[in-house]
Length: 454
Image (cartoon, rainbow, N blue to C red; front, side):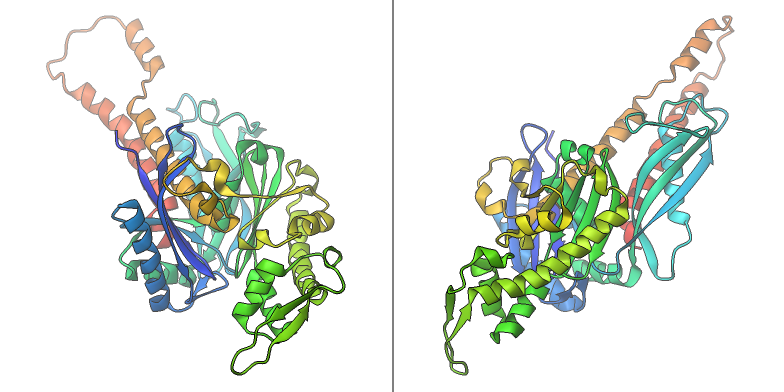
């Protein structure tokens, strides 16, 4: 059977990146078939401001990825971020139908689907519904136990719900459609990044993912393989670049080069006499910049960002449970000494997360793709693959489901005369198995497909 091909589209503040991938030979890693990247102009702080400009940038990145992978691209999984992202906790419960001997997948789907009907602030729509803890007849289930298969009359759960501004989501949809594409699913960017740089051991032990992009810094906290807290902060790499530009009185592209090639997040890591010479141009004379001053500018803003991150970690209630520590990713994670500064501020072990451990060898260099700034784009491919495979598995399980208790009851019954119409019973069985399939399909379409953005 031909492997599913997934396309991830990262619409960022500084770049737009498109990745085409499929499941690797080992069934775990992803093989990137092609990717394209272009500068992002119409996006600010993760929000599409100019739809036509953003559409042009998307079109260029997608065309490059399509040419390199030799794949015609018509639908994409899109990342979403920005200050308009909010999260909340909610509790829901349902009664289990008396004809169900135990909780079925359709019951679980119904409970999750009902969360889409909760009261939201004006202009908000739901992006994700993450179950936290399940209760059957008021008895809490451990995280290892699925409610499907448990006997009970009432199913209750705590949920972490992520919402976004409907208008901003519509702008993303409009830009993608203007570029000639269809949105397969919308994914919160730190959730996508987590798929690329974390493994099950990290998520189970407790970890805080911090994705430092150009316009926003995204935080996602996992514990016992469940996402517990999400947040999007309005400060990131562009704020540092602008501070350098204003503090050193240079142009923006020079400030970006200073930040990435010569900057440091710790003043103690550079000498007092270290100097960088900036070439002049027709309107500006050459100038010399102290690396000590440069590090001071970078340190001040980076410390502010990481203090906000630490506040979110404390707010989550899981600050004492992050055994796997903090994982930094995104373009800002490549700044020199940011790992050490993060450890000082968050008081947690910290590492830089790169997507290379999830990449299978391909014609594209792994070194080329292992930059942390590609975590979101590659994570979108991994997320899309996981959701597609989950949908296929659920459909296959429902098609092959057999009620063994029903068969036992039939065996205990006394033989009865053969009914003249022999097609009625098979017809009823077929209807019984196909109705849950339709419910699952409608639910997944609503959660990950078009209904998410309509």
